[in-house]
Image (cartoon, rainbow, N blue to C red; front, side):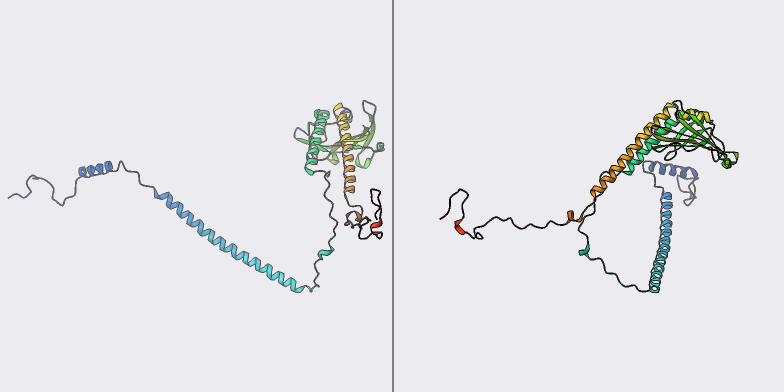
Length: 325
C-alpha cells in the first residue's frame, strides 16, 4: 500500500496552506476580473462633510436657543419697564382726535417746479471748483504745485509732500478794499501794490515761526467784484509756502486767474438772479386770498320771462313784430 494518493507522491497534505505562487495567481486573476469595473467611491470625504454639517447644525441650534432666550428677556424687561414707567406717571386726560370736518379745504401749494435740484447744484459746484483749481494751477503751479479742490472756495496745493491750503473768493459788488494797517501782536504786515492793469492790491503777510509758518494774502477789485487770494502754510509740517509777496501779486494778475474772476462773477450773478426768480415764483404759487379757493356760489337764474310767469299772458308782442289777439 502507498502512504500518498496516486499521482501526488510528494504533494502537500489536503489541509496544507497554499503556497505563495498559488496566492499570487489568485490575486492576479482577481485583479484581472476587477479591471473592467468602476473604482469604489471614496467615502472618507463624504463622511467628513456630513460630520461638519452635523456639528454646524448643532451649534446653530444652541445659538438660536440662546438668542431666543435673550430676545424674550429683553422684550420682557422693556414691557415691564414700560408698564412701570407708565404706572408711575400721572394719568393725563385723553385728547380727542382732530375732527375731520375741521380740515382746511384749501390745498397745500405744490412744490415749485423751479426749485433748485441738490444733485444738479452739487455737480455744478464740482465743475466750478475744478475750473478754478485749474486756473490756480496755471497761476501758482510753479510755486506750490498742482492745486486741487478742497471745498467751497477752498483748495490745496501739493508740492514735495507738503499741502498748502489756498483760499480763492470772488464776491460781486461790495465797496472798496479794507484799510491797510500792521498788527504787531499777530506779526501782520500790510502794504499796497498794483496789478499790471493798474488795479490796487492789498498785500498782507501774517504769522511766522511761532504761528507755524507765514500766510500770504492779496485782495483787489476786478470785474466789479472783490477778490481774495490767500496761501497758508502746511499746518502739520509747520512749513511756510514757498511764495513771496511779489510772486503772489504777479500770480493774481495772470490772465488765467483774471479770466476765472470774470467767470465766477458771471456765475454768481446768474445764481442771484435764479434765486430771486425762484422766490418770486414761490410767492406767486402760494394762495393769496381765501376767496380764490372758496367754492363758487351758484348765481340765481337769469331773468328770462316764461309764459307761466308773464303777467301779460298772451298779450305780449312776438319777436316777428306781430301782436297776439
